Amino acid sequence: MGDRSRSRKSWREKLENPPKDLPKVVDGPPKWEKSFGGRRVLVPTPLLVDELIRKVPKGKLVTVEQVRERLAKDFKADSTCPLTTGIFIRIVGETAEEDLQMGKKMKGI
Image (cartoon, rainbow, N blue to C red):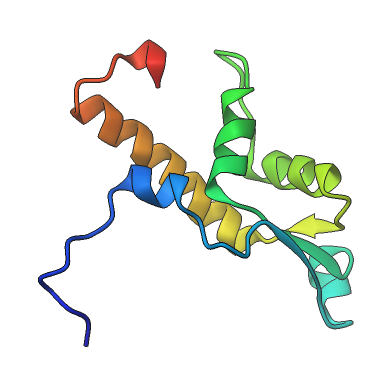
């Protein structure tokens, strides 16, 4: 059981302090070829996802699939892990909301 007296990390801390071993491209088993379109799968960082999302022009839409495809291409991987990418997209969004709640202007987020 965890220590309840320890405070939770803020979303900003989660965004800016990823695990030390990320990003990394992992070589998966042969069965990944069917699921991921290849065996080399990128496990990104929240900051990589944030950086890519910030490049999307105002008023334009980018899908999770497009984010994953671009990150995989940038790292010469076959695909990007859908689970971690989804988690990191949430961290990016929650960090923006946290910044708004702390009084940061929308333009700076």
